[in-house]
Amino acid sequence: MTFKLYNAPQSTCSQRVRFVFNAKKIPFDEVKLNLLEGDQLKPNYLKLNPNGVVPTLDHDGAIVIDSTVITEYLDEVAPQVSFTPESAVERAHMRALMHFIDEMPAAAVRVPTFNLAFLPSFQKMSRAAFVAMAESKPLRREFMLAMGQTGFSKSEMDAALTRLRRTYERMDAEIEKSGGPWLLGKKITLADVAVMPALVRMDDLGLPGWQDLPRIVTWFDNIRAHPAFKPTFYPGSLLSERFPHLRQN
Ligand SMILES: N[C@@H](CCC(=O)N[C@@H](CS)C(=O)NCC(=O)O)C(=O)O
Image 1 (cartoon, rainbow, N blue to C red):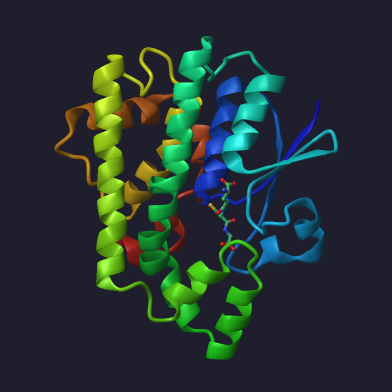
Image 2 (spheres, protein in one colour):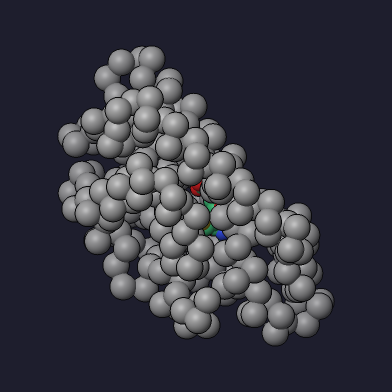
């Protein structure tokens, strides 16, 4: 079995997949795409992933896209060190949480990410080049055009931060209900892996919004102490490493 992962070091969606590979100790080849240069929009890559985003998994020539789908796929083809609960009810609960995570924090985190990290690069582009770049994105065209070259407004930023806060509160309630320390109880699952990069990103942006929620503080410490964490966040995986201006926030 050979695995090739098309991904980007700082991409939150890619980090989910790298974490699962590392936790399972499955070797994989990494093809690193430069998202700001548009590698994800090149014709050959679009043949693999018509959404024009990372990650994409090539498993012995079979192509699997979408990070949560890839993590579930890996748990099926390499069930050693499983991240999936055994009972159907618990699996349904995990998947419902993963849907919530994709809809809420995974979407919301893009607003502070783009405003704080990427906007300066977009501001250097001519209007025509920016619009052409935005329009070439199959999945994120409207998002890019809504942001424009002036960035998301204060009210859009506030709305995104509120959505993130509601995520931490939801996580807190899930941990309280399950008895923790993970979202579904004693065992780490794909739901923990799915939400992890959003919290790492907010921490890296200097905006951790869960300090008053001790269960989330512990959860965050636990996931950072997991053996898969360090190899996943290898040097260059944090935005603050690539964009030094973020360290001043
Ligand atoms: N639902 C997709 C979303 C993938 C996605 O948005 N990837 C981002 C990086 S985290 C990307 O490739 N962005 C490139 C772009 O916006 O052009 C997944 O989870 O794989």
